[in-house]
Length: 72
Image (tube, rainbow, N blue to C red; front, side, top):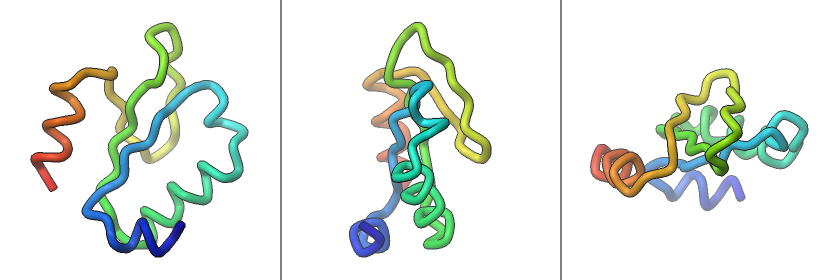
């Protein structure tokens, strides 16, 4: 996974309450930070606004995702 992150321009993280206990997702976010990749959190569910430390998270919309991709 680190190789894919390294080759990417940025990382989109789907955030939910399960993110708080997901060791795999935490590892991927840490890899993205170590590789200095921009990270955009997107809430996976409309009724779940879980916050992840160090990850700016936005609602799921075409505009939010497209704006992040366009900024890369």
